[in-house]
Length: 269
Ligand SMILES: Cc1cc2nc3c(=O)[nH]c(=O)nc-3n(C[C@H](O)[C@H](O)[C@H](O)COP(=O)(O)OP(=O)(O)OC[C@H]3O[C@@H](n4cnc5c(N)ncnc54)[C@H](O)[C@@H]3O)c2cc1C
Image (cartoon, rainbow, N blue to C red; front, side, top):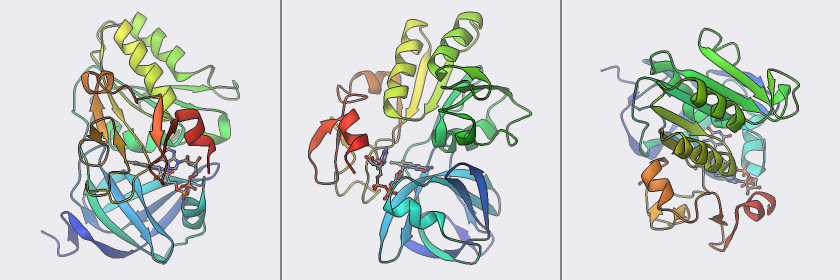
């Protein structure tokens, strides 16, 4: 075992950023020359001392290197955006459940949600990838996955097919009866629609939920969705679990613990 290997740690390890790569508008990947023991879909907690600590999916993984890809949307992610090669952050984890690895799969990523399914795409055998974003500049990993069967869609038609990833998925499942599993990550409203399409086609689905999260290991209860905790029971949930959660795609908890509609949750900060 190399002596710089993080197996799993609850104590943040201070790591130097070895590279920063721009992926799309407001989205960057932060690389670390460090080996991390993790499975597709798991996440790490990233700590900027004095500011905050937030969950990020492991978006690149190889034996001696890993990365996460962040979209600048608020206080923490805007601070991340300014970090450069050589700067340091604290990393703990990895945490959470992982995707099952099935053949005959389709992967649906919306915007930076592609980060949570990217290491899964790396290991799946010939998946169909649906990579969507609201417009061309927000698309990520186009070069990275150019050797895959990838269908690109934008809401405004500025690149690839015009329309929502759910419309593309419906077409894929109608034409391709061999697909047995759909994996997804993106805005929760999108994932709820993805689950609806899968149910209509009788295809299993696994979704990675990105709820507000504070501790990452099941103590604080901030990421609760019905009787489940996103951090330890998830973040990956299957069709049966998702259908047993009335809050999925409908309600979420704010930092304060107040429950609001998903629309309000995304507007509130
Ligand atoms: C398991 C997991 C994996 C994640 N992986 C990634 C990743 O790979 N890349 C990435 O960019 N982000 C990821 N996120 C989301 C990321 O943690 C949040 O976007 C981040 O915490 C926002 O912090 P902020 O201070 O910049 O923004 P804030 O000021 O806290 O929030 C800005 C806006 O984003 C919304 N928001 C905040 N947290 C979340 C959340 N968890 N999900 C959806 N909307 C949220 C708020 O409602 C608000 O509208 C992940 C979240 C989880 C739970």
